[in-house]
Length: 270
Image (cartoon, rainbow, N blue to C red; front, side):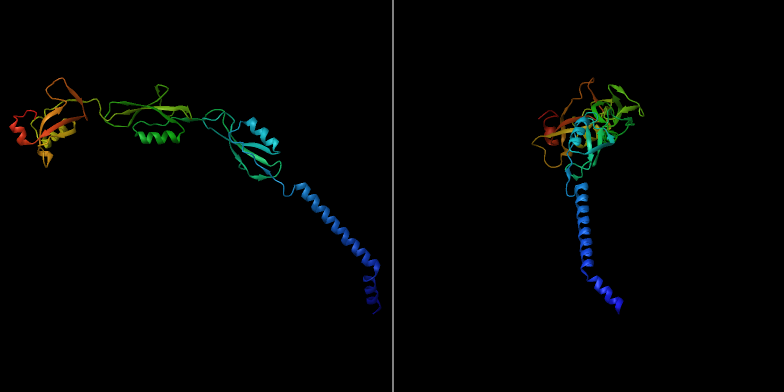
């Protein structure tokens, strides 16, 4: 029992308790100093608001970021036509984010010159299709020039700076392309048929046979019910001029009256 008594006496002795308390105090001081050091080293709780440098020139953005104690690096480039070369297009992290000092901000800058693309083949495409294709290539539609052709709003030719451009030609992105389109009428000319005395039904049939269309139909106050049985007493343009020609697809305006009124007036205009 003597050894156990000696151990108890040692543990509860003033000398042991003094050393134990001293060790605990030393440990506490070390931990406190460590926490203070870590907080100071990492600037715990402190952060910087990332400035918005989009739209700035590269020199302006570098000055702003350096003043904010932030690092920066160009990570990518793109091309925006209405922005100057090397202007900042995008940034990561985004503006107003909270970061630590000397955090690296990754910048996307505007390229010095437009990238080059190959001119697509727009011939025989509709105007809508050609527009979508040019937009997908980063190009723009310029003037629309119409020429006689039965294919309405179909691309007949593609031009750049006043000259036809062959598909596959290397051209800068953002270029303006003019399109030559069909007007839907064509160059075919036909004689104007005489419709006077025909019913509206017969006149429509004759016009279709002549590759022409029925234009405006003007009825007088004698026409009641079905206008297809009414009689044509006047037309524009007239058919009595042998030199008068019309383009295929154009319309002829007609004036109609009832058959009784037409017969009573001997085919003359009421």
